[in-house]
Image 1: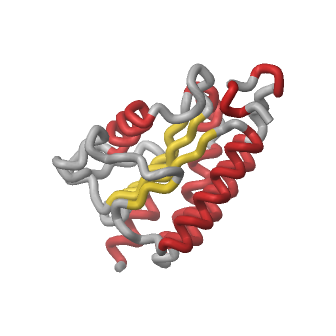
Image 2: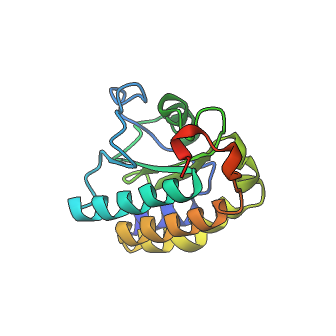
Image 3: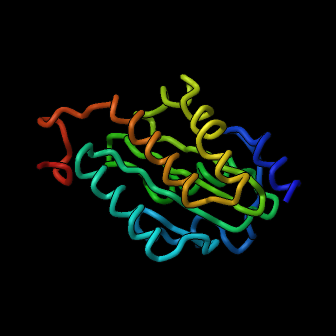
Length: 175
């Protein structure tokens, strides 16, 4: 437990972790808004969080996805998260308005990966603040659902600053 707490307390956006060799992004199928290969969420939690992210995407046109894996078996969290975001083609085509939250539970590694429209999101330190001040305190107490839920609420609030005008939205986002 104390090793886990130490890992989470020092992890930043650019933290490193590992993935099982047979779980490359090509073999990690996306399962809606929340993909939980570590099985830390109940079906009720997954449904509730997915409904929130679906409503958010309908409202803003921004796509926020969560990927939870048990471990990364030596792979860098940065590489893993970037490859997964690319493989899943996060956001709306041509808009770069996707965000992927990657969590490797056993490694204590978390990353908020953004599409090109949200590059400013990391530059302003918002991701670091959300990870350090919102998500990690819950994760240290093994309250993963609370950490994910509160982290997603903060991510969605910050991403609301990037508004896609109604007349420029892709067809999938037309109201």
